[in-house]
Image 1 (spheres, rainbow, N blue to C red):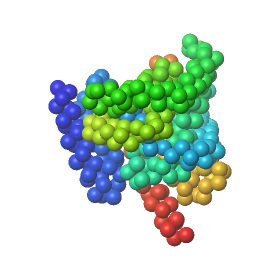
Image 2: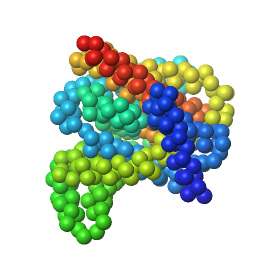
Image 3: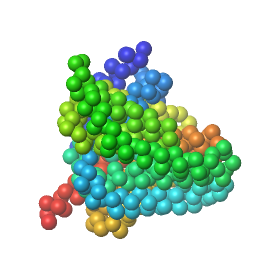
Image 4: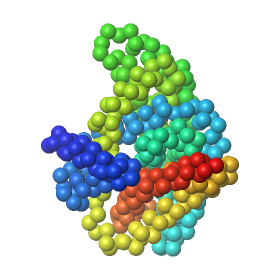
Length: 382
Protein backbone atom coordinates (compact mmCIF):
# COMPACT_ATOMS: atom_id res chain seq x y z
CA UNK A 1 0.00 0.00 0.00
CA UNK A 2 2.80 2.42 0.89
CA UNK A 3 4.42 1.85 -2.53
CA UNK A 4 1.28 3.16 -4.24
CA UNK A 5 1.13 6.10 -1.82
CA UNK A 6 4.79 6.84 -2.57
CA UNK A 7 4.06 6.90 -6.31
CA UNK A 8 1.13 9.29 -5.67
CA UNK A 9 3.29 11.58 -3.49
CA UNK A 10 6.14 11.78 -6.02
CA UNK A 11 3.80 12.42 -8.96
CA UNK A 12 1.62 14.98 -7.19
CA UNK A 13 4.51 16.83 -5.50
CA UNK A 14 6.39 17.33 -8.78
CA UNK A 15 3.27 18.58 -10.59
CA UNK A 16 2.28 20.83 -7.67
CA UNK A 17 5.82 22.18 -7.38
CA UNK A 18 5.89 23.03 -11.08
CA UNK A 19 2.51 24.78 -10.87
CA UNK A 20 3.73 26.78 -7.86
CA UNK A 21 6.82 27.97 -9.77
CA UNK A 22 4.68 28.93 -12.78
CA UNK A 23 2.57 31.07 -10.43
CA UNK A 24 5.68 32.85 -9.19
CA UNK A 25 5.96 31.00 -5.88
CA UNK A 26 8.65 28.61 -4.55
CA UNK A 27 8.12 24.98 -5.56
CA UNK A 28 8.05 23.92 -1.91
CA UNK A 29 4.75 25.79 -1.35
CA UNK A 30 2.99 23.61 -3.91
CA UNK A 31 4.48 20.47 -2.34
CA UNK A 32 3.21 21.50 1.10
CA UNK A 33 -0.29 22.27 -0.17
CA UNK A 34 -0.59 19.07 -2.19
CA UNK A 35 0.07 17.15 1.03
CA UNK A 36 -3.17 18.55 2.46
CA UNK A 37 -5.02 17.53 -0.73
CA UNK A 38 -3.61 14.00 -0.71
CA UNK A 39 -4.11 13.55 3.05
CA UNK A 40 -7.17 12.62 5.13
CA UNK A 41 -8.51 16.18 5.07
CA UNK A 42 -9.41 16.09 1.33
CA UNK A 43 -8.81 12.98 -0.82
CA UNK A 44 -7.52 10.50 1.76
CA UNK A 45 -5.13 8.89 -0.76
CA UNK A 46 -2.18 9.14 1.65
CA UNK A 47 -2.41 8.41 5.37
CA UNK A 48 -0.03 9.37 8.17
CA UNK A 49 1.57 5.95 8.72
CA UNK A 50 4.75 5.09 10.63
CA UNK A 51 6.63 4.29 7.43
CA UNK A 52 5.68 7.70 5.98
CA UNK A 53 7.08 9.37 9.10
CA UNK A 54 10.34 7.44 8.83
CA UNK A 55 10.83 8.21 5.12
CA UNK A 56 9.92 11.84 5.84
CA UNK A 57 12.53 11.94 8.63
CA UNK A 58 15.17 10.70 6.20
CA UNK A 59 14.09 13.49 3.83
CA UNK A 60 14.59 16.34 6.29
CA UNK A 61 17.90 14.85 7.51
CA UNK A 62 19.22 14.67 3.93
CA UNK A 63 17.96 18.20 3.22
CA UNK A 64 19.96 19.61 6.13
CA UNK A 65 23.00 17.47 5.20
CA UNK A 66 22.93 19.08 1.75
CA UNK A 67 22.60 22.52 3.40
CA UNK A 68 25.75 21.74 5.40
CA UNK A 69 27.58 20.70 2.22
CA UNK A 70 26.62 24.03 0.60
CA UNK A 71 27.47 26.22 3.59
CA UNK A 72 30.16 28.84 2.98
CA UNK A 73 32.12 28.60 6.24
CA UNK A 74 33.89 31.93 5.73
CA UNK A 75 30.49 33.61 5.45
CA UNK A 76 29.21 31.51 8.36
CA UNK A 77 32.02 32.78 10.59
CA UNK A 78 31.47 36.38 9.53
CA UNK A 79 27.77 36.16 10.47
CA UNK A 80 28.39 34.71 13.95
CA UNK A 81 27.42 37.91 15.76
CA UNK A 82 24.30 38.37 13.63
CA UNK A 83 23.27 34.71 14.08
CA UNK A 84 23.61 35.07 17.87
CA UNK A 85 21.48 38.24 17.96
CA UNK A 86 18.86 36.71 15.64
CA UNK A 87 18.76 33.44 17.60
CA UNK A 88 18.39 35.14 20.99
CA UNK A 89 15.87 37.85 20.05
CA UNK A 90 14.01 35.32 17.92
CA UNK A 91 13.33 33.50 21.19
CA UNK A 92 12.90 36.40 23.64
CA UNK A 93 10.08 38.13 21.69
CA UNK A 94 7.90 35.02 21.01
CA UNK A 95 8.52 33.72 24.54
CA UNK A 96 7.50 37.02 26.18
CA UNK A 97 4.40 37.69 24.06
CA UNK A 98 3.49 34.00 24.03
CA UNK A 99 3.45 34.05 27.82
CA UNK A 100 1.20 37.14 27.81
CA UNK A 101 -1.16 35.46 25.32
CA UNK A 102 -1.20 32.28 27.41
CA UNK A 103 -2.24 34.10 30.58
CA UNK A 104 -4.86 36.02 28.57
CA UNK A 105 -6.56 32.77 27.46
CA UNK A 106 -6.59 31.41 31.01
CA UNK A 107 -3.50 29.21 31.15
CA UNK A 108 -1.53 28.82 34.37
CA UNK A 109 1.80 30.62 34.59
CA UNK A 110 3.81 27.48 33.79
CA UNK A 111 1.48 26.56 30.91
CA UNK A 112 1.81 30.10 29.54
CA UNK A 113 5.61 29.90 29.69
CA UNK A 114 5.42 26.58 27.85
CA UNK A 115 3.25 28.16 25.14
CA UNK A 116 5.79 30.97 24.77
CA UNK A 117 8.60 28.45 24.52
CA UNK A 118 6.65 26.47 21.93
CA UNK A 119 6.22 29.62 19.83
CA UNK A 120 9.98 30.26 20.14
CA UNK A 121 10.94 27.05 18.31
CA UNK A 122 12.22 27.29 14.73
CA UNK A 123 12.65 24.73 11.97
CA UNK A 124 14.57 26.10 9.00
CA UNK A 125 14.19 23.03 6.78
CA UNK A 126 11.50 24.82 4.73
CA UNK A 127 13.57 28.02 4.59
CA UNK A 128 16.62 26.03 3.46
CA UNK A 129 14.71 24.70 0.46
CA UNK A 130 13.35 28.13 -0.50
CA UNK A 131 16.79 29.75 -0.15
CA UNK A 132 18.26 26.95 -2.24
CA UNK A 133 15.69 27.55 -4.99
CA UNK A 134 16.54 31.27 -4.99
CA UNK A 135 20.33 30.67 -4.85
CA UNK A 136 20.49 32.49 -1.52
CA UNK A 137 21.62 29.63 0.72
CA UNK A 138 25.24 30.80 0.61
CA UNK A 139 24.37 34.49 1.00
CA UNK A 140 25.09 36.47 4.16
CA UNK A 141 21.39 36.27 5.05
CA UNK A 142 21.28 32.52 4.41
CA UNK A 143 24.32 31.90 6.60
CA UNK A 144 22.78 34.02 9.37
CA UNK A 145 19.51 32.04 9.25
CA UNK A 146 21.34 28.70 9.47
CA UNK A 147 23.57 29.86 12.33
CA UNK A 148 20.62 31.35 14.22
CA UNK A 149 18.69 28.08 13.83
CA UNK A 150 21.47 26.16 15.62
CA UNK A 151 21.51 28.71 18.46
CA UNK A 152 17.70 28.66 18.61
CA UNK A 153 17.66 24.86 18.91
CA UNK A 154 20.16 24.84 21.79
CA UNK A 155 18.43 27.60 23.77
CA UNK A 156 14.90 26.23 23.30
CA UNK A 157 15.83 22.66 24.25
CA UNK A 158 17.76 23.76 27.36
CA UNK A 159 14.93 26.13 28.36
CA UNK A 160 12.40 23.34 27.82
CA UNK A 161 14.42 21.02 30.08
CA UNK A 162 14.53 23.73 32.76
CA UNK A 163 10.77 24.27 32.52
CA UNK A 164 10.01 20.53 32.64
CA UNK A 165 12.16 20.16 35.76
CA UNK A 166 10.18 22.97 37.43
CA UNK A 167 6.91 21.39 36.27
CA UNK A 168 7.80 18.21 38.16
CA UNK A 169 8.71 16.03 35.20
CA UNK A 170 11.59 13.63 35.64
CA UNK A 171 14.12 15.85 33.86
CA UNK A 172 17.58 16.65 35.25
CA UNK A 173 18.63 20.03 33.90
CA UNK A 174 22.33 19.38 34.55
CA UNK A 175 22.22 16.16 32.55
CA UNK A 176 20.45 17.90 29.66
CA UNK A 177 23.06 20.66 29.47
CA UNK A 178 25.87 18.11 29.77
CA UNK A 179 24.43 16.11 26.85
CA UNK A 180 24.32 19.24 24.67
CA UNK A 181 27.94 20.07 25.52
CA UNK A 182 28.92 16.45 24.83
CA UNK A 183 27.18 16.45 21.45
CA UNK A 184 28.71 19.66 20.13
CA UNK A 185 32.17 18.82 21.48
CA UNK A 186 32.21 15.33 19.96
CA UNK A 187 30.41 16.32 16.73
CA UNK A 188 32.75 19.24 15.96
CA UNK A 189 35.84 17.15 16.77
CA UNK A 190 34.54 14.26 14.63
CA UNK A 191 33.66 16.59 11.74
CA UNK A 192 37.19 17.99 11.85
CA UNK A 193 39.27 14.84 12.38
CA UNK A 194 37.22 11.65 11.80
CA UNK A 195 35.14 12.44 8.70
CA UNK A 196 38.20 12.86 6.40
CA UNK A 197 39.64 9.55 7.69
CA UNK A 198 36.37 7.66 7.11
CA UNK A 199 36.06 8.99 3.55
CA UNK A 200 39.69 8.13 2.75
CA UNK A 201 39.13 4.58 4.05
CA UNK A 202 36.05 4.11 1.85
CA UNK A 203 37.54 5.66 -1.31
CA UNK A 204 39.64 2.65 -2.42
CA UNK A 205 36.91 0.04 -1.77
CA UNK A 206 36.10 -1.91 -4.93
CA UNK A 207 32.33 -1.64 -4.65
CA UNK A 208 29.82 0.67 -6.33
CA UNK A 209 29.33 4.18 -4.88
CA UNK A 210 31.51 3.57 -1.80
CA UNK A 211 32.10 7.29 -1.21
CA UNK A 212 28.39 8.12 -1.43
CA UNK A 213 27.61 5.36 1.05
CA UNK A 214 30.30 6.73 3.36
CA UNK A 215 28.75 10.21 3.16
CA UNK A 216 25.31 8.82 4.04
CA UNK A 217 26.74 6.75 6.92
CA UNK A 218 28.34 9.92 8.32
CA UNK A 219 25.11 11.90 7.85
CA UNK A 220 22.86 9.37 9.58
CA UNK A 221 25.37 8.67 12.37
CA UNK A 222 25.62 12.36 13.24
CA UNK A 223 21.81 12.71 13.08
CA UNK A 224 21.35 9.73 15.40
CA UNK A 225 23.96 11.01 17.87
CA UNK A 226 22.26 14.42 17.90
CA UNK A 227 18.84 12.90 18.61
CA UNK A 228 20.28 10.59 21.30
CA UNK A 229 21.72 13.60 23.15
CA UNK A 230 18.53 15.65 22.90
CA UNK A 231 19.56 17.86 19.98
CA UNK A 232 17.47 17.87 16.80
CA UNK A 233 18.63 15.26 14.27
CA UNK A 234 18.71 17.97 11.58
CA UNK A 235 21.44 19.82 13.50
CA UNK A 236 23.57 16.66 13.53
CA UNK A 237 23.04 16.19 9.79
CA UNK A 238 23.91 19.84 9.16
CA UNK A 239 27.21 19.56 11.08
CA UNK A 240 27.99 16.33 9.18
CA UNK A 241 27.47 18.18 5.90
CA UNK A 242 29.82 20.96 6.98
CA UNK A 243 32.44 18.35 7.93
CA UNK A 244 32.22 16.64 4.53
CA UNK A 245 32.38 20.03 2.74
CA UNK A 246 36.01 20.43 3.86
CA UNK A 247 37.10 17.21 2.14
CA UNK A 248 38.08 16.48 -1.47
CA UNK A 249 34.94 14.37 -1.85
CA UNK A 250 32.50 17.25 -1.35
CA UNK A 251 31.38 17.65 -4.99
CA UNK A 252 30.92 13.94 -5.65
CA UNK A 253 28.90 13.41 -2.47
CA UNK A 254 26.87 16.59 -2.95
CA UNK A 255 25.73 15.82 -6.51
CA UNK A 256 24.78 12.21 -5.87
CA UNK A 257 23.15 12.76 -2.46
CA UNK A 258 21.17 15.65 -3.97
CA UNK A 259 19.93 13.33 -6.73
CA UNK A 260 18.89 10.64 -4.23
CA UNK A 261 17.26 13.17 -1.88
CA UNK A 262 15.23 15.16 -4.39
CA UNK A 263 14.12 12.07 -6.29
CA UNK A 264 12.43 10.41 -3.33
CA UNK A 265 12.98 11.52 0.25
CA UNK A 266 12.70 15.33 0.20
CA UNK A 267 9.38 15.39 -1.72
CA UNK A 268 7.97 12.89 0.81
CA UNK A 269 9.08 15.16 3.69
CA UNK A 270 7.40 18.28 2.29
CA UNK A 271 4.22 16.45 1.30
CA UNK A 272 3.98 14.61 4.63
CA UNK A 273 3.70 17.92 6.52
CA UNK A 274 0.34 18.53 4.85
CA UNK A 275 -0.72 14.90 5.23
CA UNK A 276 -0.30 14.96 9.02
CA UNK A 277 -2.73 17.85 9.47
CA UNK A 278 -6.24 17.02 10.63
CA UNK A 279 -8.56 19.98 9.96
CA UNK A 280 -11.80 18.48 11.28
CA UNK A 281 -13.09 20.46 14.24
CA UNK A 282 -10.91 23.47 13.40
CA UNK A 283 -13.95 25.75 13.12
CA UNK A 284 -14.57 25.35 16.87
CA UNK A 285 -11.20 27.00 17.63
CA UNK A 286 -10.91 29.28 14.62
CA UNK A 287 -10.30 32.53 16.53
CA UNK A 288 -7.73 30.90 18.79
CA UNK A 289 -5.93 29.58 15.70
CA UNK A 290 -6.08 32.94 13.94
CA UNK A 291 -4.80 34.77 17.03
CA UNK A 292 -1.96 32.34 17.71
CA UNK A 293 -0.98 32.25 14.02
CA UNK A 294 -0.69 36.04 13.85
CA UNK A 295 1.27 36.00 17.12
CA UNK A 296 3.58 33.21 15.92
CA UNK A 297 4.36 34.90 12.60
CA UNK A 298 4.68 38.44 13.97
CA UNK A 299 6.82 37.67 17.02
CA UNK A 300 9.39 35.53 15.19
CA UNK A 301 9.54 37.85 12.18
CA UNK A 302 9.97 40.99 14.29
CA UNK A 303 12.20 39.46 16.97
CA UNK A 304 14.63 37.87 14.52
CA UNK A 305 14.59 40.92 12.22
CA UNK A 306 15.36 43.24 15.12
CA UNK A 307 18.25 40.98 16.10
CA UNK A 308 19.63 41.20 12.54
CA UNK A 309 19.20 45.00 12.57
CA UNK A 310 21.15 45.27 15.84
CA UNK A 311 23.92 43.21 14.23
CA UNK A 312 24.29 45.73 11.39
CA UNK A 313 21.91 44.59 8.64
CA UNK A 314 19.64 47.17 7.00
CA UNK A 315 15.88 46.69 7.42
CA UNK A 316 15.07 44.81 4.17
CA UNK A 317 17.68 42.06 4.69
CA UNK A 318 16.74 41.98 8.39
CA UNK A 319 13.12 41.25 7.54
CA UNK A 320 14.23 38.59 5.04
CA UNK A 321 16.21 36.91 7.83
CA UNK A 322 13.21 37.20 10.14
CA UNK A 323 11.03 35.51 7.51
CA UNK A 324 13.52 32.63 7.33
CA UNK A 325 12.95 31.95 11.05
CA UNK A 326 9.13 31.96 10.95
CA UNK A 327 8.46 28.29 10.17
CA UNK A 328 8.02 26.18 13.32
CA UNK A 329 7.87 22.85 11.43
CA UNK A 330 8.61 19.49 13.00
CA UNK A 331 10.54 21.01 15.93
CA UNK A 332 7.43 22.75 17.32
CA UNK A 333 5.32 19.61 16.75
CA UNK A 334 7.77 17.55 18.83
CA UNK A 335 7.67 20.12 21.64
CA UNK A 336 3.86 20.27 21.44
CA UNK A 337 3.73 16.48 21.81
CA UNK A 338 5.90 16.72 24.94
CA UNK A 339 3.57 19.39 26.33
CA UNK A 340 0.46 17.30 25.70
CA UNK A 341 2.01 14.31 27.45
CA UNK A 342 3.10 16.44 30.43
CA UNK A 343 -0.39 18.05 30.67
CA UNK A 344 1.07 21.49 29.87
CA UNK A 345 -1.21 21.64 26.82
CA UNK A 346 -4.88 20.66 26.69
CA UNK A 347 -6.05 18.44 23.81
CA UNK A 348 -7.91 21.40 22.24
CA UNK A 349 -4.90 23.71 22.47
CA UNK A 350 -2.67 20.98 21.05
CA UNK A 351 -5.00 20.58 18.03
CA UNK A 352 -4.95 24.35 17.50
CA UNK A 353 -1.14 24.46 17.75
CA UNK A 354 -0.79 21.78 15.04
CA UNK A 355 -2.75 24.01 12.64
CA UNK A 356 -0.74 27.09 13.70
CA UNK A 357 2.49 25.21 12.93
CA UNK A 358 1.12 24.35 9.47
CA UNK A 359 0.18 27.99 8.85
CA UNK A 360 3.66 29.26 9.81
CA UNK A 361 5.14 26.65 7.49
CA UNK A 362 2.89 27.63 4.56
CA UNK A 363 3.49 31.36 5.09
CA UNK A 364 7.29 31.09 5.09
CA UNK A 365 7.96 30.30 1.36
CA UNK A 366 5.99 33.23 -0.16
CA UNK A 367 7.20 35.57 2.59
CA UNK A 368 10.83 34.69 1.82
CA UNK A 369 10.23 35.06 -1.90
CA UNK A 370 8.76 38.55 -1.50
CA UNK A 371 11.37 39.85 0.94
CA UNK A 372 14.39 38.44 -0.89
CA UNK A 373 13.07 39.88 -4.17
CA UNK A 374 12.82 43.31 -2.52
CA UNK A 375 16.32 42.90 -1.09
CA UNK A 376 17.72 42.09 -4.55
CA UNK A 377 15.82 45.00 -6.13
CA UNK A 378 17.31 47.39 -3.56
CA UNK A 379 20.81 46.03 -4.16
CA UNK A 380 20.49 46.51 -7.94
CA UNK A 381 19.10 50.03 -7.44
CA UNK A 382 22.06 50.87 -5.21
